[in-house]
Amino acid sequence: VQLQASGGGLVQPGGSLRLSCAASGSILRINAMGWYRQAPGKQRELVAVITSDGSTNYADSVKGRFTISRDNVKNTVYLQMNSLKPEDTAVYYCHVHAGGRDYWGQGTQVTVSS
Image (cartoon, rainbow, N blue to C red; front, side, top):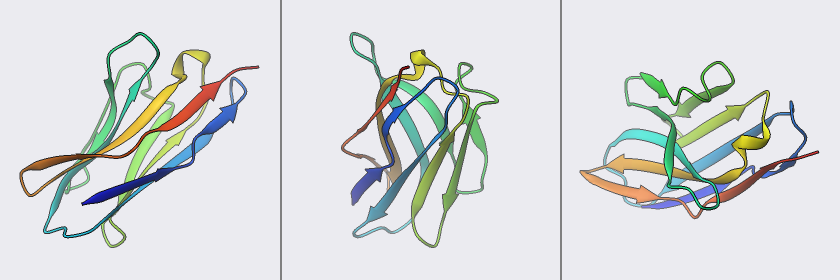
């Protein structure tokens, strides 16, 4: 399984970005899809996750600002990020749990700065 993430970039505080991550390869059944992030000097943390039945979970720091969604036909997960703050600056990694294994994307940089 390969994961290709896109959509990162530089945005001003209060702005929006949309991340996408497409899974390809020998995919039997994708269970959870999600996004993690890692800021410089910090541990990687969960941002949001969505299960195969559409249940979602968010980090407290992004609730009300970020929305995760998925397209099961395209095997793609999205992260709509609104009202971005400087503390959201990090490398964002998509994650997929499928067939009992974990897969990671290559990471995409999100920088929130004026």
